[in-house]
Length: 169
Image (cartoon, rainbow, N blue to C red; front, top):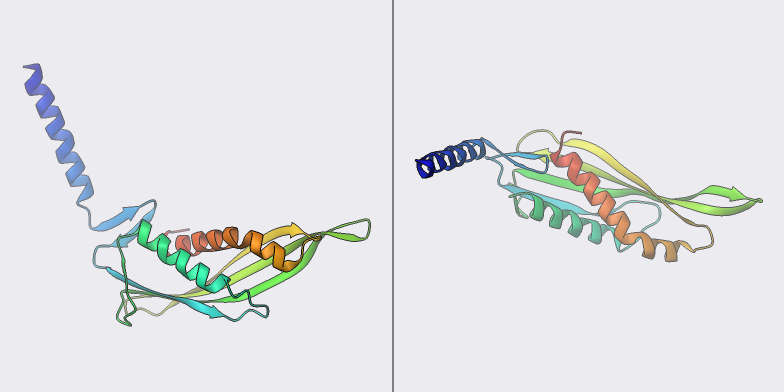
């Protein structure tokens, strides 16, 4: 009798799980994509900032592609007929002094901004900007600081863009 109750209990749980997962949209880590959306095209390759870090644009594009590939079921395509289309460019890459001690610069801030245009199927594009600040010692050259910060810059911006594209925040 206990085995029969156990079997019925497991069967009920399995049915509940299958019913829960058979909804009409895909969800993963707060990502919600309708089942009808299958493809995405990612074009983040322009650098329009006054100062150009030649490594940033290709690194950011590749990181965003990897994130979308790993965290969604969307297939990436180069077709203009993609269900989602992401176009972007780096709009700002600038340094400012943020800390001064005894009339000497001690901290600098690198500001990096990306402008995104996101089109869902035949709808008009939605546009938004993502911007992050990165602090570094004023004793470092910009070239030294950006080489040390590149991974953090790319990861942070790709995360912010991904969240804006696929999450409701």
